[in-house]
Length: 109
Image (cartoon, rainbow, N blue to C red; front, side, top):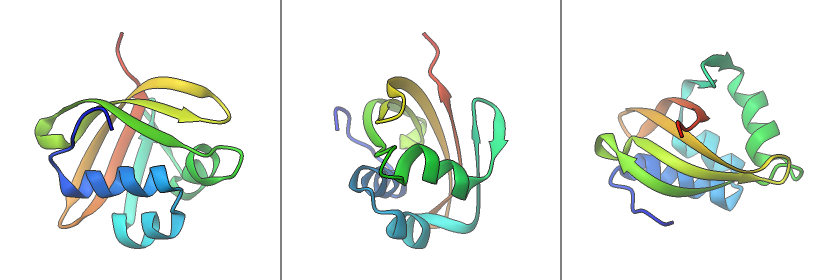
């Protein structure tokens, strides 16, 4: 990663994404009732992560460019095999030792 992450839960999220470890992502990283949005629209978390991160056609990866908000607000070069590389913003809500919500979308220029 280009930038170190100060929040260990967010770091675990990124590690699971970059490893393509869907089982750990759902079992160890997210709360059971986790939610997410993409570009301001609520999404079905399981369907979105399968399509954008974990399917063999997606192969999602995150490289952190900037971190703020105690490591819970990130600017990321997000790459997948479907869309290529995009500069994205990720905001995480952490509950206990898990992510209960994340919001992602295009990063402001």
